Amino acid sequence: MARKKSLTAQLLQAYQEAKKAKAAEEKRRQQEEARRARAAEQERLRKEREAAKQEREQGQRWAAAQREKKRQDAERKQKVEQVERDLARRQAAREREAEQKKKEQARQVQQAARLAKQEQVEQMKAEAQQRTDEVQARAAALDRVLIDRSPGLRNHREAVEQALGGGATAFVEAVEGVLAGCGYPPGLRRAWRLAYAPESRELMVDVDLPGQDVIPSVTGYRYKAADPVPLENTIRCCALRRCHSVRQRGGTH
Image (tube, rainbow, N blue to C red):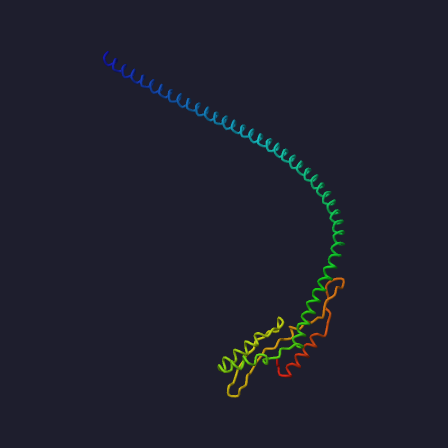
């Protein structure tokens, strides 16, 4: 009987120890959970404090940046205003200098205008005289063509007759050489075409006579307060009448 009690007591003792161990384990678990909860709370509080600190620091940096920006803006504005004042002073000085130069230039222009006008008048008079001389020289050259005409082929008769003995081609070339040697003023030289018919002993000379553009349209120029003004004349009409009379006589040179 004592032995059975001892076994029961052992079982009871083992149950109680197991219960105590379970309770101790539960207590340790609860303590561990409480410790973890406190640690998590502390970590949360630490993070919140860290976030708050960062937010404060960020706010401080932003405020410092705003203050620096305002300072730079104020400094920049001050520099701009100083530059604008300097530019205004320089502009005023340039305007005064330009006004003085303008007055001086106006005086010089007036003086130069008087001298230039005098020089222009003399130059235009000289130019009018020069152009008049050129026109008169041209008209005289044309008059000499009509008055002092070439005697034709008479002075070259012997050479031409000798060329005729060499055939039609040699004869035409000799006559062309004579025509080419005749001197005329510029603009009067025109083309010609020759043809010789041995059967009829006829020499056909086809000459392109000069047009009216070679005759000067004015007799001279004179100064008239502004530009040289051409004076109408009768040279062209006279020259055309002379050319017409020459053509009526057969165009002999």
